[in-house]
Length: 250
Image (cartoon, rainbow, N blue to C red):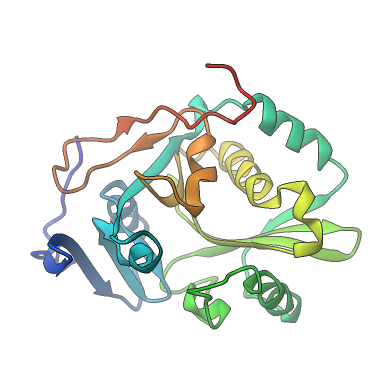
């Protein structure tokens, strides 16, 4: 069962109505947070961007494109239950010559250049800065942040910004060089994050939100052992049947 701490982090939710759809949302601005409380937030469907921690029931950014907000789908994967799909195995083998590392630190100039290249993929809602997602003290505040970097030789071609505790690894934001589009680096960095989590003895991997409806984030729904949370009812995480690849047989 999911537990709620006696904390201001779980104060009464706010409500917003758009096109007759009631959207529930909560926010907290934190300078720092301990591992135990951060684990509880992840378990209860929270995410963060910089110092802002949040959870909400519908994504209003999708309103213009679809005519209405899309229902948010918090996702996680129990690390020891994960297995590769056939397409993910193919990506893993294809990218075997790329090197990678997982470090505690702050983004370098190479990360900022990569971010700007990656940002050009977005036709709308493009982020302004890498600091839309993390703080300038990413390695220490408000959480213990990590960088997972992928290299082709000496060139940084992909990177993930990560939160972690001894129990949880949560992907905040991932970016890749558009010249490497054919290598499925968005999926590859997720696979590396799961691999790293297993090596570190971490229990849960949180890939972030997707949507119940079809959306840009459907690639997150193609992983085995997925679970999802309806935090409004807050009963427990439930199994989520992964979205099959187009080439897979039913």
